[in-house]
Amino acid sequence: MFDTRELGRRPGTLKRLSRTAEAPRDLGNEVIGVPEGAPIELDLRLESVMDGVLVTGTGRATVKGECVRCLEPLERQLDADFQEMFSYPDADARNRTADSDDDAEGEEDTLFLEDDLFDLEPVLRDAVVLALPLQPVCQDDCPGLCSECGVRLADDPDHHHDAVDIRWAALQGLAGTNQDGEKDNMSGDAPRSAHVDEKQEK
Image 1 (spheres, one colour):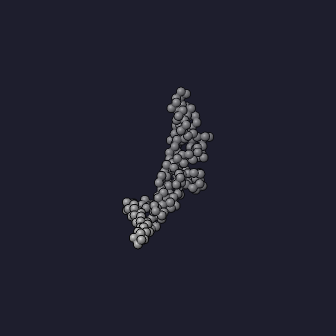
Image 2 (cartoon, rainbow, N blue to C red):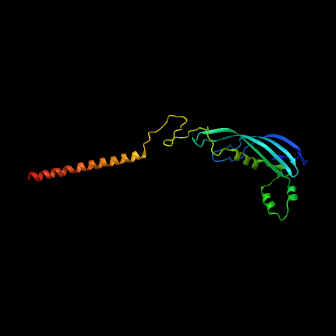
């Protein structure tokens, strides 16, 4: 939680502060994110406005995950920028009309100060998740893994398999079937020839 009491309610009053916070759980997506408890460096600018406090800032943290192509671990620095308005509780009452549905919907998205304090976690979470790459890679030209055996191709650039054209593979299978048939015919002809010879002798 951050305290705005020193800022006061005079519009235009500014305050800058830096703070280190611990990353909450599940700050990221399925493949990359900020480990729980890791430090996040926050640089904040608080500005008092008519209806609340406008918070502008940057969160810097080390994110960890794995390359989506080769599955190797990766680590990089991430800067997440954000800006959010935290309204005074009484400001909403002044601006809201009793029969306005639009105001009711807007109230659900509005963040409020509570006892002159504001919670930055939901804002920071949204900013970090949006700044994360959806398809993180260890390097832009990562060749990934071999589709045949799973070898990491970056470690063995000359790696390859002798691929057989499936059209030739079908012909080879057909040729093998014919050869087997010929062998069966040959083995079946021998007894018939011997039987004919016996009849001729009689």
